[in-house]
Image: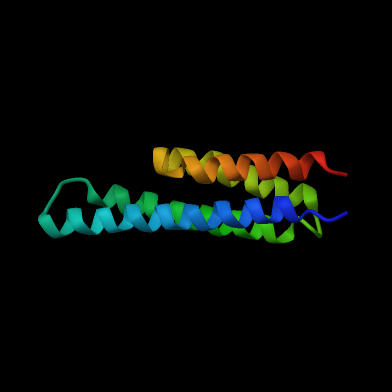
Length: 107
């Protein structure tokens, strides 16, 4: 059975997550340049977002071979990404949540 929809949702969710993480990293760089306080936390959040985005892409890529593992990777990435990047991760959260649930429901 083809799981093209789940694969596309996982990969798009990961790509949008990586873009959100890069934006947070850029804001952290601007904060460092102007001498703002607390920019280090933004770097940590951006790094977590990059890792979770990559995890989501891997989940989307393997969903055709192993739908359970791919769905779990997408759901884990969706939930933890929301904690790491907050409102910037919402689009990725929705895509990954739908893709992960569809991957786990399919037989």
